[in-house]
Length: 170
Ligand SMILES: CC(C)(COP(=O)(O)OP(=O)(O)OC[C@H]1O[C@@H](n2cnc3c(N)ncnc32)[C@H](O)[C@@H]1OP(=O)(O)O)[C@@H](O)C(=O)NCCC(=O)NCCS
Image 1 (cartoon, protein in one colour):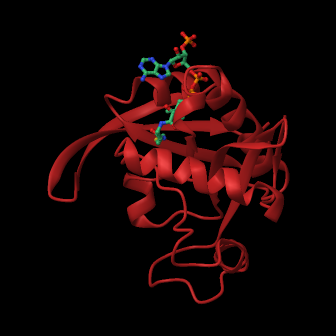
Image 2 (image 1 turned 30 degrees about the vertical axis):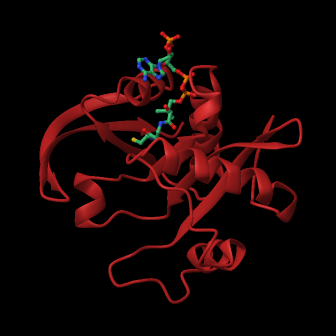
């Protein structure tokens, strides 16, 4: 199992994973829109900070792959904004629905943290999640996340309690 920069070989299973997310109406993390865009171009532009929407920062997308199939994605923001400090943090992630509760989320975050610290050279990493996202806060805590606080955010008109965790890069 490895966490890699996205490549064509896994695009079909990435598309399947996205369809699963749409069917299950998963809102906490979105895979990139493969119908409208060339995802590899989008990913390259994010990484290099080219033509990003206003107030967006550079980000590296990585894919967790195993036995020839896409398992999950991490998106590592290279810096924080006021908005990311409250909601979003440095790392967003999603595991494809049919692979939930099999330990993949814990491994994905472990490898993404390693990349954020060693390759992107962050000193400390902020990870946020909804207060009721048990799977997400479990994988953050299993990876050494220290809960700083919980803040109230308005997301799409709804009040949401957001947990903010920090992890120091050693
Ligand atoms: C959150 C998510 C990444 C967890 O991934 P996963 O591969 O299921 O996580 P793991 O298998 O490593 O599970 C870690 C722990 O959380 C528990 N867990 C996972 N999902 C859970 C759920 N829905 N309810 C309760 N516990 C859950 C597991 O049982 C495991 O517990 P244990 O350590 O006591 O054995 C995955 O559910 C997902 O992609 N969700 C949609 C996107 C999302 O929420 N992203 C996070 C945004 S902050």
